[in-house]
Length: 427
Image 1 (cartoon, one colour):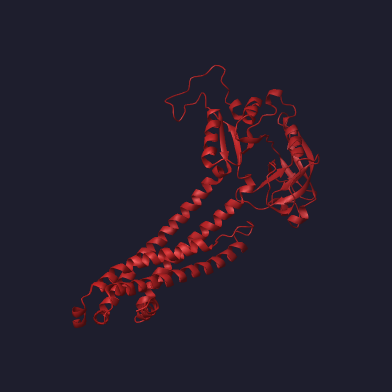
Image 2 (cartoon, one colour):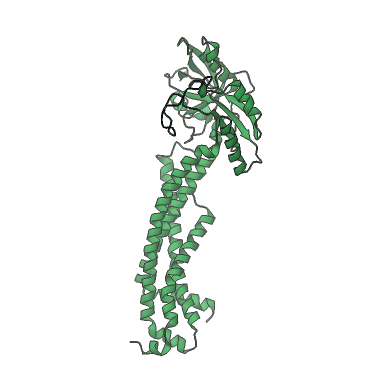
């Protein structure tokens, strides 16, 4: 019996008891459908999170802050209050980087383009005909951003420019993102010393894409950032001006993961805390992977139950075809061929169940994506909730076929070991 004959015979045998075969395939389908859908969600959401890396910075960008030593407070690792050290930085000073700290960072091997990240506060944003709205803004780092309209702010110009967060487009009276580009808006900024407010005219040059990571944050160019900082600090004593809470830097692009870890350890020893982009989104990805992992586990339980269905289906088939098996052996078919015949039946059950399950998940995924894009995800452009790629789909099908094969080996071995004389006498 040739391999093609084995496949044809196995297919015909499965159709002998259609209801039993269909029920077993449905059990496989449920597991394959669940696993495929959750893997699709994992791929879709993680892909979107990866796309949002540009909202935080380059992949090799590092954010550096001073390491705080909570002097005067019982530490988590201490048995009581810490002893006061003469000459030690105050708790307030520990929140900021000094000029010496910035110089030390610039001299650190593996770091380039070290820049002070000065922060400012804004009171409100307003267009000519709109209400005043609270706004969160920060300096642009020069990293390429995803924009729905316009261009990124120019850090080399003296004019005041802003990339507006998409939430403000309709609120400020603009028809859409494109209509907001080129328009002038007003920022209200207060002096920290007196509380006096000043108004700054700003040109909107771009509108940001919606982002789950940086949603709601507008970006200002260097000239505007300096102006807003100067207003905030007006009237303050010199000791309270130009405080830098964080620095940004680029890690040498040739560094391996181990070298980046070593660099972070060196910075820690020098009194800094360093965080990369990957660190920033690591928690988000862990949560996503954890949720989809649990859902995949339920799919695995369904497959485990289906594997018992395969065993039962093939055991019943062996029982019903005992005399037929005896006849095939009497005519010279080897036990290996008998084993292969029943194993192929198990593989076919796994194949059809997994293929139908994957196709069902793809169809359901498309429907869910269309519904999500028109409802609860309509403000997150670029997010495809469920995505499928060739490699994971093939892996799912092959894995399920392997499980089906392993489940089918038990009845297949029993069929292969049947004594032909005993089998022919079976009633």
